Amino acid sequence: MNPYLELLAREASAVEFEGPVLQARAAGLDTAELEEDKVAALKVRAMLRRRARREAELSALFDTAGDLAGLTDLDAVLAAIVQRARRLLSTDIAYMTLHDPERGDTYMRVTDGSISARFRRLRLAMGAGLGGLVAESGTPYNTADYFADERLRHTNTIDEAVHEEGLVAILGVPLRLGTQVIGVLFAANRSARPFVQEEVALLCSLAAHAAVAIDTARLLQETRSALAELSEANSLISAHSEAIERAADAHDRMTGLVLRGGGVEDVAAVVTEVLGGTVTVLDDEGRPLVGQAADLDSGVFDAARSSRALGRTVKRGGAYVASVDVGAAPVCTLVLRTEQQVAAADQRILERGAIVTALLLLFRRSVAEAEGRVRGELLDDLISRPDLAGLGERARRLGVDLDLPHVLVVARHEGQRERAAFWASSHAALAHGLAAARGDEVVLLVPGEGPGAVARRVARELSSSLGRPATAGAARAAAPGTAASGVPDAYREAQRCADALIALGRAGDGASADELGFVGLLMGEGRDVSGFLASALGPVLDYDGRRGTALIRTLSAYFGAGGSLSRTADTLHIHVNTVTQRLDRVAQLLGADWQEPERALEIQLALRLHRLRSHITDA
Image (tube, rainbow, N blue to C red; front, top):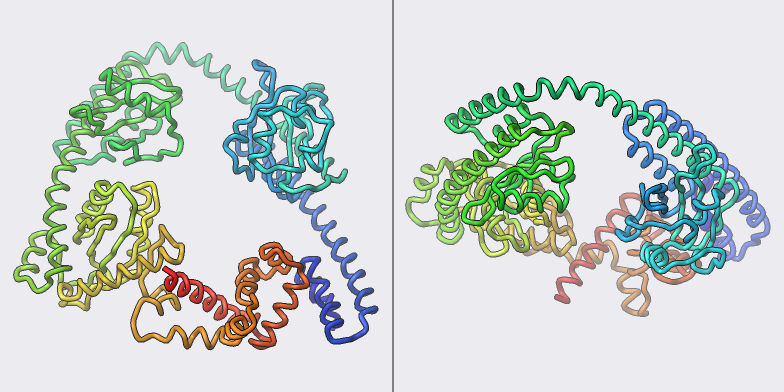
C-alpha cells in the first residue's frame, strides 16, 4: 500500500510526508519514485484543504446569516463573528473595533484570543496604526510585519499594546453602513505571515454581516426605547400605591422568615419576588452567598462602603446596593440589579432585607463557631488519641455515627485560614461529620465510601469559597464499626495523597490514593517503582546513561506535542530530521510497537513517574 494514501487518509501534517522518503534513504533505496508520489500527495492534500476551507467559510457565512435572522443578543452575534474569523483564517487572535462619534476615535468592542488587558482596552485615533488607517480610509489593509511597516503611523500607546499582545501580522477590513465606516474587523497572528486575497475577501464578508448586526441592534433598541416611553406615563400613575403594598408585604414575609428559622436564600427570594430583578448577597469579604459575582465591579464595592457610611441604599449604574456593618466591620451586602427604576420606598425594602440577612448571618456565625470548636476538638482527639475513652459518645452528641463508613479528607490551601476553617465547619455540620483546622490545611471526617468523589467535591467547593486553589487528598477511615481506630492511618494517607497531587502539578484537584494509578507507587511502601520503570523505559534510560543522549527528553516532548514531529522539533530547538533519527533509535530500543495505544500509554505513565521520582529525589 502506498504510504502516502495512509497519510492522506488520516490528514497528516505536511512534515510527516517526508517520513517515507527518509525511511527509504535510511534503507539505501532509490527515492525518486517516492519523491514523485510525495509531490502528488501534497498537491492532493492542498486541494482537499482548500475545498474543506471553502466549505467551512460558506458554512460560517451561512451560520452568521442565521444569527442575524434571529438576533436577540448583539454581543453574542459579534462574538460569534469574531470567533469565526479567527478560526477560518487560522490566526492567533481576531478582534473588532467600533467608532466612537463623541471622542472621534475607535475602541475595542470584541476580542477572541487576546491575552493582554491593555490591548483589550486599546483605543485607536483615526489614521493611527493599521486600524486607524482602515477606519479613516475605509479600505482593507494588511501587513506581514506590523512594526516594520513604514506605511503605518505608529504611536507609543498602540505599539506598546500590540507588543504586549505579541502581534506581528495584522489584517483589518472596514465595517460599513452605506458610505459610513462604523468600525474595523481584524485578524492577526503572533508570527509573520502574509494574508492572501481570499482571506481579505472572507473577512470583508464577515465584516458586512457584523455591520448589519450592529445596525439591526440599533433599530431594535430604538424600537424598545419608543415603547418604553409610551408606557412610562401609565407606570408612574400606579407606582406609588404599588410601592406601599410591596413594602408591607415584604415586611410581613421577612418577619415570618425570622420566626420560622429561614435562611439567607429565603430573604433574597423575598426581595427578588417583591422588587423583581436579581439579588446577589455578599458576605463580609465581598464573596457571593447567593447569586453570581461575575457581573460585579469595583463600583459596586465602592457603593457598599458608601451604603454602610450613610445607612441607606446607594445606586451605582444599574445596581442598588444596601450594606450592613457591626462595629465598623462589614457583615453583608445586598446588590439588586433591575432594569426598572427603584423608588425610595422600594429601596427601604432592600435595606430591611440587608438588616435581616445580617442578623441571620451573625446568628449562624455564633452557632457555627461554638459547634466548630467542639467538632474540631473531637477530630483532633480521633487523630492523635484514638484510644481515648468516650469518643463515640461525644460523636453521638454531635450527630456523628462513627460506626458508619467514613472518609477522611485533608485539604491544603494558602492563606485565609479563618475562612477555610469556617467553610470546613459548616460543611461538616451539614454532612453530619467533623472538621478541624490545622495550619494551612483543614481536615474533614464525613460519612461515605467514595474517597475520590468526596475529595474532588471538597477541592471544588473550598476553592470556590476561597477564590484560590485548594487541593484535597482523601482516604477511607476504616471498615464499619472501627471508624475511630482507623482515623490516624487515614489522616496520614490523605496527607500523602494531597502532597502527591501538589507535586504532580494538580493543585486545586482532589483524589484518593487508588485514583492516582502508577503515581500511587510513590505513596506506599514495598512497591516496585524501579521495576516498572525498567520494564517500560529501561533500554532508553540505559542508552541515555551510557551515551549522554537525550532520548528520554525527546520522548517527553514528542508525547507533549501530541505526536507532532514539527512541534517536537520546535520545543527542543532541533531539526525535524534529528527528531526522526532519535525516535528511530527509540523504536530500535523499545520495539516497533512503542507507539501502539496501550504501549504508548504505559510509556507516558512511566515518563511521568520518572519525572516525579526525580523531582522528589532532588527535593
